[in-house]
Image 1 (tube, rainbow, N blue to C red):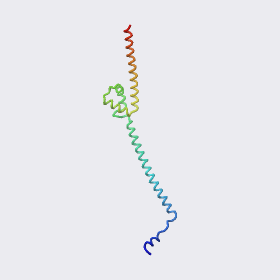
Image 2 (cartoon, helix red, strand yellow):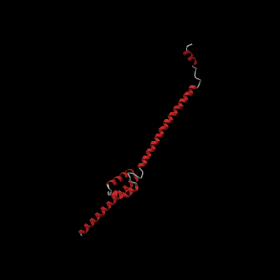
Image 3 (spheres, rainbow, N blue to C red):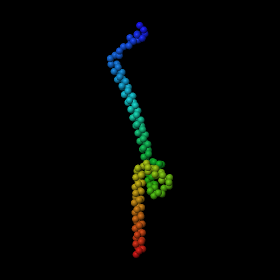
Image 4 (cartoon, helix red, strand yellow):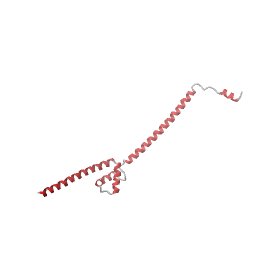
Length: 137
């Protein structure tokens, strides 16, 4: 008997159920790998969301463009009147781009100023008409 024939005689059939157990084990390992990939992806997404949220909150913080909201409030009247230096105007403008609260307050002031200017013009016109009417007498 040759050596190949003796090795062939040593091979035996797998016990019943052993292949099934092997398949179950391999499926379990695959599920574990898939769970790890999904968990890693979920963790990466959560980290990105947290970083993004931090960045957005930082942009919307009261201190934007080196100005705090109370600084903008103290400069608001001069900003609306156009009396600020160009650098200050730019700082306020940058702050307003990112701060909804200050933007709303400035818009309110601009509306009041516009209404006040209209009222002042009407008063001037009335005085002019009165002067002309009295002059015509």
